[in-house]
Amino acid sequence: MKLALQVIKDLERQELIRSPALGGAMALLFHDEPVVTYDLDVFCLLPKAGLLVSLEPIYAALLDRGFHAEAEAIVIDGVPVQFIPAYNALVTEALEHAESRLFDGAPLRVLQLEYLMAIMVQTNRPKDRQRLAMLVGNATIDNAKFCDILLRHHLLTAWKTLNLAS
Image (cartoon, rainbow, N blue to C red; front, side):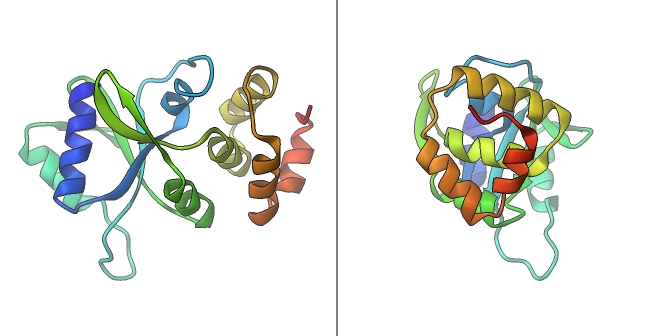
């Protein structure tokens, strides 16, 4: 994973991505108990290139370096890395508030737990509901911050519908 983090930093230096931060299940390692995952979800901002968002420049740069595509990811040193452009206001805000951390000596940014949870409420996939149930029982959550995020992004009803609130 260390090489993958170095490559992500390289992409940022080349200005192919901005404000990258680890999200998804791998980010939970920094907040709670680990969960099974097979990839790195890297949320990021992309340079403005018209109306459409394209990952082509990222894929081209990585393919030129000898990495290969596998489904929706690029495999870097055996680790599938999925680049997820900020697709709405919640994800953009989450990137703005990402925390700096170290993993095996390599610097990275990680989405804060409350934002990870709000994104899971928003996506509402079965695995997200399962992870949310685990987090409610196990994690130290800043409930005021979480509720504020849910309110500002119109997700409070969705959260209450999940019936997970403690």
